[in-house]
Picture 1 (tube, one colour):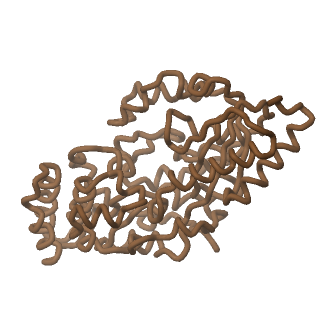
Picture 2: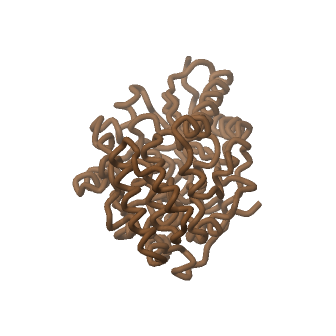
Picture 3: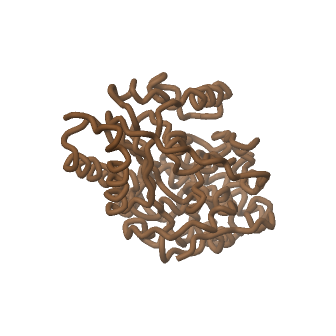
Length: 376
């Protein structure tokens, strides 16, 4: 096919945005592929060891920051946003304030976003091909070495905030990102300015001090990393700070003032499944592997496996108020065949038997930080 002329770029971009909106995306932009400064920041981050066990972060070399090396012929990148905060779910703060309940990051309560976004982006690519004919492209949703947040920033979808998440001025930060690398010579959109200003609420609210400075994150201390990516025992000194967070953490976003502009997701697949928005720790700890695999089918949670699931919940039970029920639940797992689970259970039993403790339950409210939640 012949590439669109310069005069056709604006009209084509408008058509692509309209197609994206019809497919459930809330925003779409065209990114330039100049990522040299981001490449240097990534390499500095890895050199500090802040990526922890995520060895994949330093694989693939410059393919991660040079889109045309990853997908030959790439001239521009379409970056798309889809809001995820689930409608009709229990309030995040109300769950965090009840240590007998399990807190699951709100992005993971519904269907696995990887599959949904990838399917929608493929449909978008097909629709573009219907408009202009065949073209070169490849769809990505966390599926390859892609610097998705810098690309979204370059596409004008927002700025990278002090907590290292992308923030949109009109939508906060509760959204997923996906990309289409393309050989279309589309003109890039203009990046937006950083609007974090002097605010440091996200840094102050992080339970584990994983944000040592603005725009920097030490993944080794991040609760999302510890409960999802990290294999083996979680460091002892960080366990009390996890509170009842068993999969991910939203604290740095919960306190962000820009999330007053966030909206509930219109996508039914993002609604909470199996009561995971407010289940008790003891109930979830009782799931055997068969039940775990069944109830996490089609969910992002399944990727951590049953062992890490039990490890995380055991630690949360160790942080919960002492009770005979919690002790009985832990004792039932004391002989688990996996050493990591047995060790976490032993730690939790010691905590449960030592009596009440609350010092380990920092939250946004404890720090008297105003919290913003999505509005209908």
